[in-house]
Image 1 (cartoon, rainbow, N blue to C red):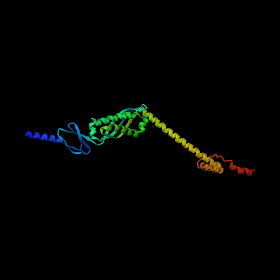
Image 2: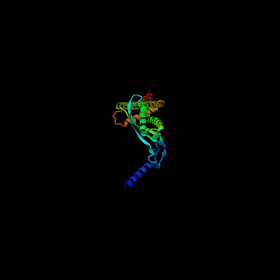
Image 3: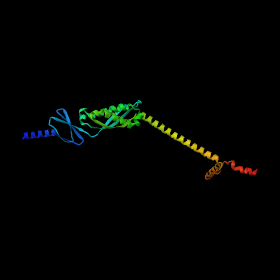
Length: 247
């Protein structure tokens, strides 16, 4: 009785080491007596018990959170920057054979590259040229991980932590820039208004009667107000005809 139970247990163990099932996004790197013989999957995989060994590799995109890195920018500002990288194994054999732990190795490469690349930029470029920096980070990391069978598809800077003193300086700079633009806009408005007044004066100068009409219009506007006394200058041209008749 005990021998039958033991035999059943042995058969179950042998079958468990012999039969493997891989999902659609998985591949199995097969080693026979330590020698690489090929990649299998997905589906049902049959192995030679105690001779073949399979290492499972996932082919889905991996999201790697790069921890905050202390970076000194080109203009000597100390900032803390973190990022996120997206990669996936495109060659399961290389991901197992060429590197011991491709997840850890890719994480270390991403951290060192982040520090070295961002140190080449000034703080303003780091804040304003993220798309350019992200593309450069992706290209450099992808070139370094390509021999491992790893494809880095995207690297994005998530957050740039700036010292409080630098934040206040940036805020003052932004406020000064807004004031400068406001003064420029105001000066341009004054210049345009002065130009229009000059053109109006030229028109009025060519037709003196229009000046008198303007005076009368102004008098009408003042008369609508509740003023008891109105002092209004009378152009001398209006009195010329009366002076001539008196002479």
